[in-house]
Structures are given as C-alpha cells and as structure tokens.
Amino acid sequence: MTRENLFRRLESLATALYGPEEAAHILELVSDLAAKQHVQTVSPQPLTQADCVVITYGDLLQSKDVPPLRVLHDFLAENLKGTISAVHILPFYPYSSDDGFAVIDYWQVNEALGTWDDISRIAQDFDLMVDAVVNHISASSEWFQAYLKGDPKFQDFFIEANPELDYSKVVRPRALPLLTAFDTAMGRCHLWTTFSADQIDLNFASPEVLKEWIKLFFYIQQGTRFIRLDAVGYLWKEIGTSCIHLEQTHQVVQLLRLVAEIADPSSRIITETNVPHQDNIAYFGDGTNEAHLVYQFPLPPLVLYTFAAENCYALSRWASELEEPPGDTTFLNFLASHDGIGVMPVIDLISTEELGKMMDTVQRRGGFVSHKHNADGSESPYELNINYLSALFEPGEMHENAVRRFLAAHSILLSLQGVPAIYMHSMLGSLNDGDGVESTGIKRRINREKLDYTKVTQELKQTVSLRHQVFNRLKHMLDIRRSQKAFHPKAPQKVLRLGDSVFAVKRASHGEAVISLNNVTGKPQQVTLAESVLDGLKQATDLLSNVSYRREKDGLTLILQPYQACWLKLE
Image (cartoon, rainbow, N blue to C red; front, side, top):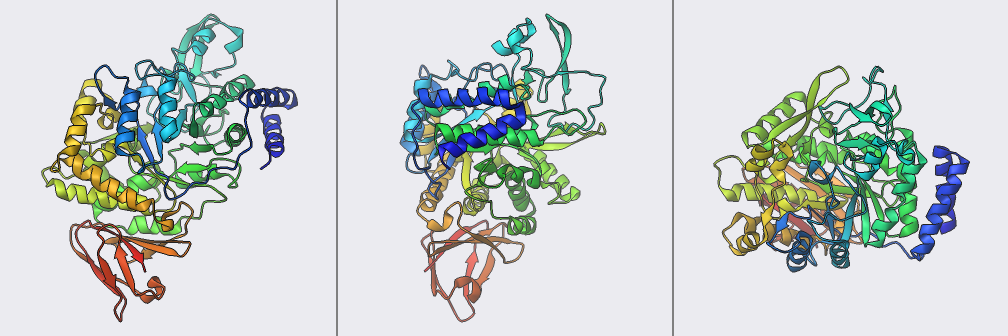
C-alpha cells in the first residue's frame, strides 16, 4: 500500500473515532514523526519458515554485576543465533507490579535490566518483539499521579465510573473488583481497573491517549519489528456492553497498524487476546487491516489435553477445521508463555468432564487452577498455572518419558501453519518453581523463575542433565525446520486422520512435502500412509532421525515408538 493510501486510511479511522478536527491533529502528528525519523519506503520483509520467536523476561538469566539484558544477549548470541530469528522480551520498562505489566513509563528501560542501548544491540542480532501494554498503566505512573493531583491534561486519560450502575455484562479476565476507589484532588472517584487496582485502564475514547500511543514510532526506531498489543480486547469501554472486542477496539488496532507500517513497512502487529477462537481470529480483520499475527490460544490447552488423555481426537478435529488466515496474516503458535495455560479457548472443544480431568492432572503434577468472575456472580476456571514440561511430567516417572512427550508436543507446535514461539523456560527444560509461588502467593510465578547464567550454561554442557536433553533436541528440531519450505507460515496444511493415537499433518509448498507424525501415547503405534497421501512418491526420510522408508504395495508403513515425533519428507 502506498504511503498516500496509508495516510488516507489513517484519516478515515481517526475521523470515525474522534471526529475530523482531532483526525487532522493525529495526521499532523504522524507526519511529523515520520519526517523526523526519516522514514523510507521499503519492501516489507516477508515471514518464512526460518522465523521462530523465543519469549523471555529480560532478567530470566542473571549473572552477578552484569546487566541482565547483556546476559540475555550473550546467551542468545552464543547458543541460539542461526536457530531462532526473533526474541520477545517481556515488558522491560519500569513497573510496580504484575511482573512488568503494570508499566510506570512506557518509554524507559528498567535500569535494573539495562538500557535502550542493550535493547538495540539485541535488535541488531535478532528481530525484536516488544509489548505495547495498551489497556492500562501503573498507578505509580506520572500520568496517573498527575490525574490524582487534578492536572487538567490528564483528566480524560482514565475512565471514571459510577459504582451504582450495572456492570453485569462486562467480561472479566480475573476474579478481582472491576472498579477501584481513589482519593483525588476532585474528590473520591471510582476508576476502571480491569486487571488490578495497580493497573489503571486507559481511556482510548480520549484522542490524547491515542496520541501518546502513536509513539510506537519510538519502539520501531529502537529496532523493534514485532509489536505485541497486550490484552487489547478490553481496550474500549461502553456501559451496557461486554466491553470486550468492541468495534472501536478493532478500529484502534487498525489505526495502530497503520502507524506501525508508516514507521516501518516491515513491522508486524500481534494481538494478544486469550478468548474463544472466533473472537480471537476476528483480529485478523480482512487480512490487510488489523493484526499481522494472532496468538493461537487453543493450541496450548489442546496439546496438553491430548497428552494427558493420550488421545488426539479433539486436537485433530480442531486443526482440521481451521480456516486459512486471510491475506498476509498468520498464527503465532505457542505452548508455553509467562502466563498460565488459558482454558477459555477450549470450552467448546472439549467437554466439561474432560476439562475437569485435565485440571486434576495439572494439580497432581504440581500446578494450580486460577478462576475468573462471571456475569452471574459465579466463578469459572480461567487458566492453568504450571510449567509446560512439568505439565507433561508425571511425578516419579523417568526423565526420558517426559522429555519424549515434551518433544512430541513441540513437534506438533512446529508442524502447524504459522510462526512458532517458544518460552525460554521451555527451551531450557525448566520445571515448576514451587518456591516462587510459596514466597509470593502468585500462582503465575510457577513458570517465571530467575536462573543463574553460570549454572544454566554448566548444566547445558552436561549430557545427562534434563536441560541438556531438552535444549539440544529442541534446537535440533528448530534447525531442521528452518530449512524446509513445507513449513513456511503460509504453506497449506492437511490434517490426516490416522486414528486417535497419532496426530498427523501434511505440509506442502514449492514442490516439497513433509508429513509430521506424532505418537501421543506411551505405546508403539503402527502407521500406514495410503497412496493418496504419498502423491506417487516411493520413498520418505524422517528428518529428525535420518531413517528412510520405502513405499510397499499397500503404502508406506512404519512403527512409531512411544511419544515419537517423525517428520517424513517425501522424496
């Protein structure tokens, strides 16, 4: 799209949201920022099968007297350069709570982590993903403190509410009060606080708030390619509605995408909306106007359920019904992240009884279940808090069984259409951090442990260690994947129904085809691929083990060992 068309669409959206006078101010601001940063028109850099994101906190790895962001850069450069393409550094700004998501200042780096120079150095070696925490800001922020003091500039930045009104339709992500009372220079006010009393919702109905977020230009100037819009579904509020996924929210996403593309045509907007599938994929828009990537939220709980039940029926059914993402959009596929494993995306995919069994399994394996408030005053499960490897690790069993299960789960992740993202604790073979939960009372800390850099690097060199086994075998899979055109993010996929014990998907692109076979059970499984699947080819090689198989009269038959993953490249 030409710059002229980008600005024309920007003006149209800004006018719809704020009126023609404010739209003119917004256009002028974007034009000024583009001129100051000498934005040039360049061809967008396409996503390929070589793209893979590692998700990490800036201080997940620590070394005495060295800024954590430098420690992170050293580790990534030494161990994962050429294997992963991008790094998502979770909020690295000054913050007051929620492990970074109660941001005090969006435009500064937490001095305990490092500096913008450290961020920019990482961006020189890897594509950088940063969080735009658009829904709320810390109660300790200058913006909110100025509001409390009566500064007229900030009086429209937050959402004042009447606690006597009916908020029963509002969708809630947490079991906490929706409104919080504050004493201000104007008197006692109740403000909208969707996530916590320390996270004050921003009022995007005010054009002044939108103008602040046009500073996305600054992130891109620091080398950012991917901008993750955190909790964006809750962004716009209208009393009497659910206050989630409103039309104005989608319009703001469209507007921020235009701003990002004007700043750098290769930038990508990612929406984070932990909600049922149809609501989630609505953020693709028409394929050209909203998110470039959408988190594939059903995948983590579905894969976990598949291995807990040793049955892939639900996963195969869901994957076979996925529609091709429109335009140049695609999914961001993941299994683990800094948050828990959301259960909302699978409420229509598995039964209540099956969900209950999965929750029992998680709790038996050292995890927790968090709940949310419903409109009728009841509570329901919202997410499972557990490290993903621990979620696949039955207490007392041999490490090797859990590792094979874990790798098969990641084989499924890496085989599906989209861009894969892997949490650093998954790469490193970490387990539950029970001490973190016990010392803080925060369930999500179970998967947010801070690790000693020296100790981790030593364990990675010990061939018998759990970290070594997980890290090197995952790295092997990633290195193979990046060279296979069949795993291109947009390459077509076809789920093969080979029974409930083996999840199978065929990917093909540019004359290359790979069939991913994944035994989700603890027993050997015989698989026969019919002639119609083989496309007349006589031989296939498992890319993961380098074992070759020849087609016989009835097709190609092989035996998958317990929890074995096999990537058959048709030759």
